[in-house]
Length: 237
Image (cartoon, rainbow, N blue to C red; front, side):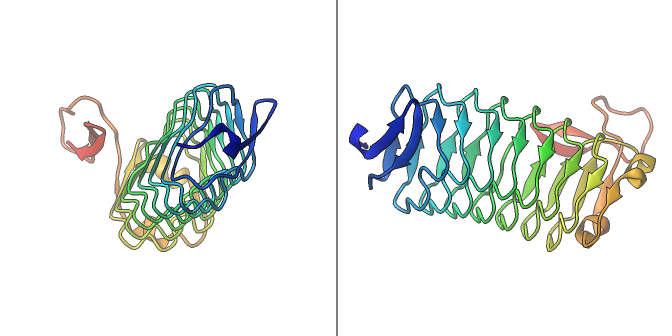
């Protein structure tokens, strides 16, 4: 584990990690992880973040190519730009309910990330947020999201299904460009609602997928294009 002397800490802000350990425990008392604090720490495989941390800065873990998993504590509200850019070994991440936005480039080129749960409090998914996450197979967009940014899921070549809430009104330019495996879109609204969404250019993969409408928690009395969740997975009635 890393020694306290490996950290540059000023008034609760971890400015920089200057050690070379593969397992890091951030000391109690740290409330913010500064911009680029662990950027380029290619030997870092695991990290423990204390509960008192409320902010993770720009590019904080960018280029940590050996980091395999991370748990973000409750209290952190935003994942800032490029926070996990190029974390090519990251397979899982736990995001707390306190998070309200996933900024641009946040998980860009996290090529080993197979799944991620976006909490209900998130209202915005910005540009390039999950671009080139080539191992991501499915994702559920929470109900509070109203727009999906340009290039948000660009190049997610393994993505087979996505759940989109009723409240989405805009899907950005090339948001799903190159998603050649996308087969199913589970939409919480109706067919007429879907037609009202502004879907920008270069989203052919999304438009070609099979759209499942009419989310229903209870089994409908008549047949139709209905679906619901079973153990967190969208399933046709």
